[in-house]
Length: 380
Image 1 (spheres, helix red, strand yellow):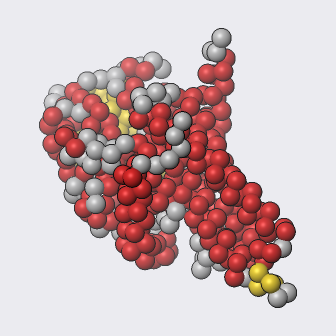
Image 2 (cartoon, helix red, strand yellow):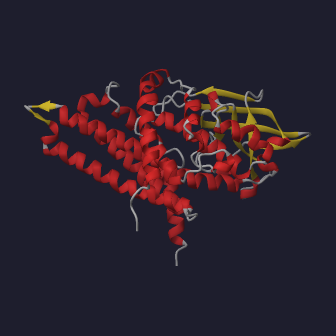
Image 3 (cartoon, rainbow, N blue to C red):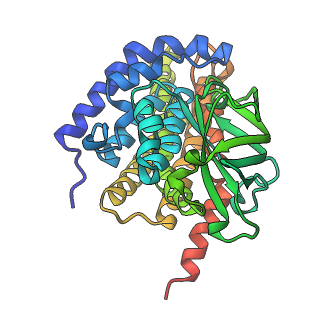
């Protein structure tokens, strides 16, 4: 067994940590207040190869592994999860299906400029009435001359207000079978796509939208892979991305812990730092232990992805543990800060708001428990 990171992994962490400190940290406060994502970050990420971390060099990517992807996520989220959320929605949810199943033309039109930060993408999956029950989606696509006509709605879609294209899931035939759902690449603006920007409590500077789809025409060449029934791509994407999101949760917890440790060492009460009081010291000890335990589960999950051994139940275990851990740790961070913890001058309130998003987003904790329990029933 080997629990060490390679020299390449350490170099990735060092590069991203430096970039985050110099190019991301100065933008966070204004972006959170205005709830506007600094779009120029996509070009900068592309310049460092961070949009192509998970893709082979032969396809224009950086050729790194899932462990590297998780390191990038962890370090981005340690400073700003909202920025990491927009990065993730673009580089994984929008681009991965195109890389995995797109036609050569689709890769040229969307994947290549996506890697270069020239076009920003998102993934339209969740719906107002469906929530986590993806197979009950109501958005449908009817075949017409030259393409498909889409009608329906999508909710909580990251990057939608600023996207140049969206990967959109729609029903192409009746029924709840996997082959009833297909994926479409929708170029924006599209006259049939009406996007409203949402105001949120968490990941505020990651622009999120409600989409009303009314008789939107999507040409045949934008049906992903030129085939219907590509719902399996969604499942593959979600399993891998749950490992990635878990690394985001690890980063948020680390950011909150580091801020709390520094605060506890410098906040003086009755002549001594509050870290010397057992009540505070025990909170920090629990936080450190929680983070360490989740860290190795996250990177075990990443290792399994790299070995081609990831399964839905393992991905759900990692996501459940990491997301619930992030909520616990960030709440304790607020308690350690006391009154300062609910002041916006300190980052821990933001970390907690953002962490709460991930016991809901990418599949609720309850959905993760359902997936895990189903796998237990099938064990002999």
